[in-house]
Image (cartoon, rainbow, N blue to C red; front, side, top):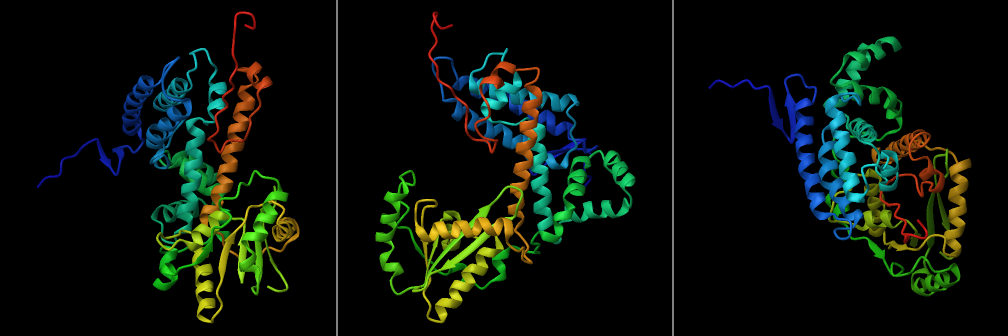
Length: 400
């Protein structure tokens, strides 16, 4: 049977063309984007319709996710006609969702929607993909990039390789800029859950959630007595251990452990960590979780029962306040152990770079567009980017 030759083919949701330049895929996204904009237009209106936050959620979940899927495998340029059309679709979708007029400057619109331009989002996706591929010892994509790097033996050859490899220009550039973190990242040939026995994965962890109903907005003088009352039975005749982590700007993450004298209940204000440790239904990608579960299982076999207890942070609880200061000191003055971090932790650096890039873009654009807006309203938070800047003000003919 003869296999027909075609100029493009769809594979795993990505349209590949014979030149691998992504033009066919971008055209498909442009057509799809127009249909999604029509949906948003049907759901929005000046005096009726869905909330702008809901319309932005539709844009992010349906359109933006489709555009970003597979973006790291294609070379894109802001000056190309296809990419310019994609940017216009993004602007139009946000404009319809937020209810802005056509005269509203783009930088103002993106600032209030907390939505970076597509090329910033693409750079973020590529950075995270490099870290994820780096964590897999036998990743074909990472090995290919490494081979390209070995061939280009000098700085000038690397620059030439970035310019010549049109299809993988952005991917190779991101690899060159981030390869130095390879020695600090934890790498594995298979998922971390399969390092340990089934009893470690399925073991039941005693996780006490008595403080979850506590209102963390209350002042410390209300929360601390509530904690002392609910944790009394767990603190009596037991070793009490307080743990905390701290991240200071420009410094590594600090961690601390504080043990009492009459003290085997572990108090922690990290709900995400406790949920991950106590969860035995889903696999965890962080390899450290299973080492903790293994240690708790080993302790239980030796007759030591360990309970995990969540407490709110910065609420006047003496042990938590003590360990918080220890963790802050460790972040600045502590020693750095021989420790390989999970690749997901490096996503924090990628997000910070993307946030700084977006903020610089807004500052630069504000010098000639939307000057009055940025003079009155500063960014409420650097984008991570979910909060809308919606300011309600009633207008009349007298106030203008």
